[in-house]
Image 1 (cartoon, rainbow, N blue to C red):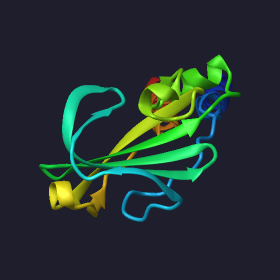
Image 2 (cartoon, one colour):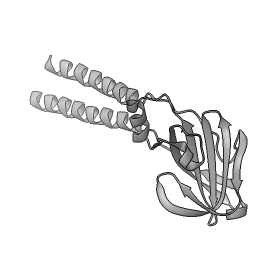
Image 3 (cartoon, helix red, strand yellow):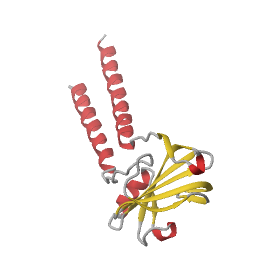
Length: 180
């Protein structure tokens, strides 16, 4: 009887833990186009120069192109002179709550209280960088490939369920060994 209770408890705990982890990231960021196929209108383009990237103190030399995707999204495509590409997704977020902002920060986004410091509107933004390989450096901009990104909620859910299954297996094994 105890083993059944333990199994039911473990299964319920695993499902609740997986649900809780996924709910913690309930804030849904909008989809952004890739620098390989940008959409929207060209906002500004610098074919040469020194540029900054949010969350990185280094200076980058190369081509920087910025697109206004819509009224709340801006896409920045930086192609450095050595072929390194950095895509920054800028999302205007004047109505997000502090807990929602924290959830996004935990998943790799940067909070920018004032976009005007980056040549954007004077409102709050969330920004996230992705890497891509661009061809030709300063004069280039063609994309070889985009970096793969992960999903923290799925990762933590699998960890919790894996630990739960380990406890279940050891519990069943212990019960089996006691009987024999």
